[in-house]
Length: 270
Image: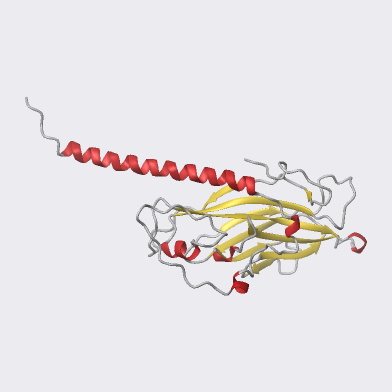
């Protein structure tokens, strides 16, 4: 997979990219349960590109033995769009030494900020709206506070940033989900089957409210990594999978037609 962080040259004002190299992946949430009484579209996928990670600032002269860094862990849209159209809430599980280590964020932006001195693994659970998926998605992120070169000087102006790219794929989405997100920039909308039309989307919320969950003007946005190249590669991979699925569907239809032709073929003369 493409290593987005290593493909970009880092200037003097860019963040320290530490820990594991930025990774890209594609998580398929599978098909909805058959028990759901929702109209679904066969051979259709919706993908939602996300980025999750952390940014950590050294406190410098204000640092103490147990409070050396201020950090923020987050899940954001890959292009900083509002994920609230898909994600209902996020649960961050911190180290047990924190007060109230299970933190629930009920609306976008899905993030939390804390301070401390130690690095540890944070479990992130994303819960989706009922018309999206009933199964939650579990992510795991290792909080990184210190630059990879521990012998080098730390900076209070440049954060240590670690981010990972993921593309959440929803197979056979419901028509209500499709209709609701068909014009939303956070969602990679699929090509619909021939002859299928969606109902018009519902009324838009006022502009200020609809933008409340995006991270375009986030205080950390200048430090966010650019995953556009990885996004393009994953879109190509998704398109290839859709083409392969369509070919498989056509082959099944051809086999059915061939079987019907064999059934009604007149017997040969003896």
